[in-house]
Amino acid sequence: MAPKEAIAVSAVIVLESALIRFIFFSGWKQHPEMKNRTEIDYNIVKMVYPLFLLGSYIGVILYIVLSELWIAILIVLIMGGLSIQMIYTSIKKYKAESKKLAADNDEFVKVEGSGPIDNSVAVNEVKSE
Image (cartoon, rainbow, N blue to C red; front, side, top):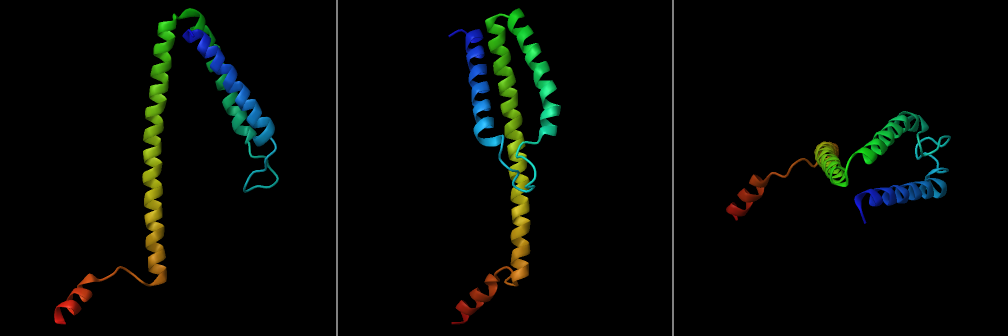
């Protein structure tokens, strides 16, 4: 399948899966914390949707103007850049969550009063026996 045909087919598949997910799952689900709201924040949709339409418009123009090779190169560059950005964001979030868990663990130990284990006492007792 040529890249231009593959792009069209993938766009239809993405649209179809998004509609099915919205209609059957997310469209009517309640927000986990605020019971009087839906799971979808429509204010964010109002902000993102115009940018999505603009990107689609630019994509259609590039699809008409560029050859299949340049379209393939652009897709690889964009997906590669987004993948690298996702990896850096994931690492940053992992480090922040690990630091928070470690801080929560330290607070738990201090609250319980057990504190760190002092190995020198156990070593002295073993030597004296």
